[in-house]
Length: 516
Image 1 (tube, helix red, strand yellow):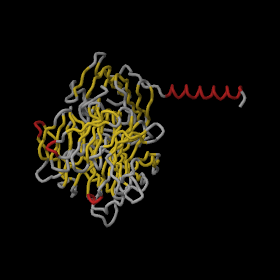
Image 2 (cartoon, one colour; image 1 turned 45 degrees about the vertical axis):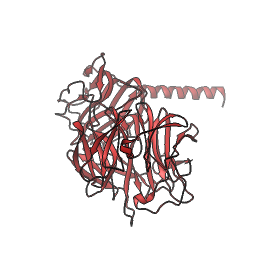
Image 3 (cartoon, helix red, strand yellow; image 1 turned 120 degrees about the vertical axis):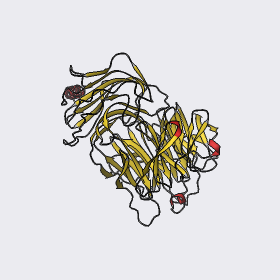
């Protein structure tokens, strides 16, 4: 290419970039904007809103609107982070919400970490898409969104097979990232200090009423993904046959053991993991961060345990006949836990009381749970069904695994990615995704410190801006998505997930194009 032609191309590219940057500029508050917090920062402790609720005269309809704010979040956290601003009805699912998502305790993985989610809905019904089967998997043990990508950890039990991690490459396609230690499963994933960590295991498929694996290799090792998609060993927990869960709590990475002997471990440095006690020598399985503590379910009792960073406390049996507690989700500021064999979800109340929120159909076990676009979703066994929490009841949505002639089918875990809810299944090994309403997610961890965030509805799209840059824009959504919000309270520091933990200043809501 001649210098002149090259110059013409560069000038064209520069002009195109300039136009793109101009078109991607975040909206500025108009004279009609409502300033909810001024220049003086307000501290939110993660337990209750620090500000009273706002006016109830806003009817969004199908008009454009925007919210903006300066947000400060610490690097090391001991809570869910929660919602920063919302105009939302959790019963009808009408309105909008903006928050940060730490989805921990989703059975065996930490699915999302410090990721912004901006959602809008008008009580719409979900649409589902099959996303393929990674490799020869019979189960996606873990899902994790890390550095803009979605990863799944699989169980592949054949004699010459091994559990692997795959990266999502678009609808129905998964990129194989190779073997780790050759055991039949990669059982847990977590994003920690900029790295993707994976735990391995020899999964006993008899627990899912399937034929046992012919692969004898034990797991119990923890790896980190390198920049060139290789796996480097960072821990070998020799007493552990399989890792149960990984979680980031207060700036430290913790792991637990799937099988006996019970084990609970903390990452100190590569190759160095300290061994910590477990409550009453019980196994701790699903690990969730909530309200200043680490919570754990157990396969050895129907209890839930709380770890404050030094010692465990027993929160007692959940229900009357449950023998295992499987998964966690924070919803409307309360921790929820799934159980076996009652097939019920229980909510943790003040003074460590458990409230039964009901049984999910006729199911026996509640596994992956996650709050997506303002609603709580849960997966089950034995029919691999998905339910949504609507007010005071559970609504059946879809069965995801139709494998014939098996005793158990599971919806094991969940994650939110690209504004959709992803679910894994056993024994088909297929991944499914779901969209409900309009939702956009920044699939990168929000850096700690002060960040300027703007969320905008712009025609049939949602947009998120961070530090003056457009980080994500949704695909067009239906023009009949018209939330009815009159009578709802505009709330700062709280929402469908729960109270925010951090600091806010210069918070505005601009309904200048919304009807009043």
